[in-house]
Every structure is written in structure tokens, then in C-alpha cells.
Image 1 (cartoon, one colour):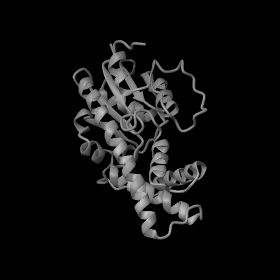
Image 2: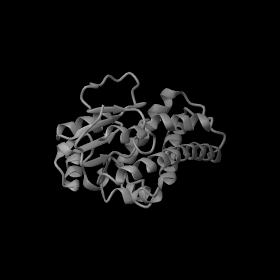
Image 3: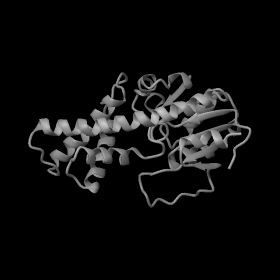
Image 4: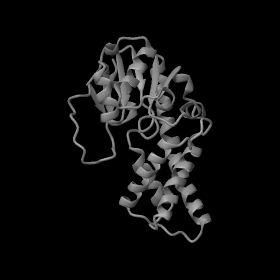
Length: 242
């Protein structure tokens, strides 16, 4: 399915540019397995939710934190929680730290590989479209974009921690449209989350390109008639924009 008459693009970041449409919980779980942290998938998911809530409550992630630092902090929270709950009993704090850092490094390496693929696609798109980034993030997205050499693609970045609005509130995507200074109907939103990207994008009149992949709930049912296009790999974006 091709999308015509698009003049500007709005990209999501996490799960879109850094994992190629995989929810980060799945990647971090692979990191746990890689580090041989002996917990069940259910126990991990509980720790993942705990960690996300902890990060939302306190300024643990600092503006200058790059992505490897962010992952180390996230995994420190999750593994410490598992230990405090008695789910995992490492032989020492040093063992917990080593395995946590090993899992975090796995995740950072995973992101690096996907960012390299995304960079090539963004380079092609930048010759044709102005682009804006809209992301639910921790206040350090600017540092991450610069570290990965993606900052030049996005002169305007709308970050939830900075603007005080989070997806799925359509207002955050309206900020992206306003930054492009284009009509919503001439703007395409590209994101991996149906509920947080596709639904609010369509609510304000944008075209919506869903990068459908491995979401949080594998059995989740979504209305696939809502997006204007569905893709499964970031390289497909250049093929559907005409």
C-alpha cells in the first residue's frame, strides 16, 4: 500500500528506530537469558513493569545519560528488585552487578545494530522530507540522538519528559505537526505502537504507518484497518512513500 502526497514525517523513537518494531521488554528478556539470570518470564515482566514505574516517579535517568548508561540503570533497578523480592539470590552483589551489566550490554549492542539500519533509511528520507521526532522518553533523548548521530535528522524533538505530555495523548503528536508547519493530512506518523502511535496520529488527521512487530502482548487484537499502511521492517518505509 502506497501513501501519496506526504510532505513531512513524524517518527517515534523507542521500539521504532532502535529495535525495528520489537517492544523493549522482549529485547531485555533476551538480555536476561544471555546473562543467564535465573528468573521466569513472568517474574521478569513484573520486574520490568516495576522498573518503568520507578523511572517515571524519580529523575533516575539524567539528561546527559547515553543509551548504554540508561540501560545499565534500568537493569540495575530490575535486577535489584528481583533480588529484594527473593526471586533471584545471586552469590554476591558483585555477581548481581556483573550479570545486570552483561544484560544491559546485550541490549545496547542490539540497539546499535538497529540504529545503523535506521540511519541509512533516515538518510534517504531526509533528502525528501522534513522530519520531527515525537517520543515518550526520560529527558535524555537529545543525548542519545547525538550519540548515535541521528540528531541532524530531527531539528525538532518533542519529548514527553520535556513537554509534560505523554502518548497516547494526541496533543503530543499535534506538537509534532505544529513543528513541521504542515497540515496534518500531509504528515505521516511512523511508529511501532498501535495504541500510542497509530490511534493518536489518526485522531488528529495524520496518515499513520504502523511498524508492526513483537508488541507487549502477543495476543493483542488491533483494528488493522486504522493505519494507512502496515510495514514489518524499517526499510519498507521508502517503498510505500510516493
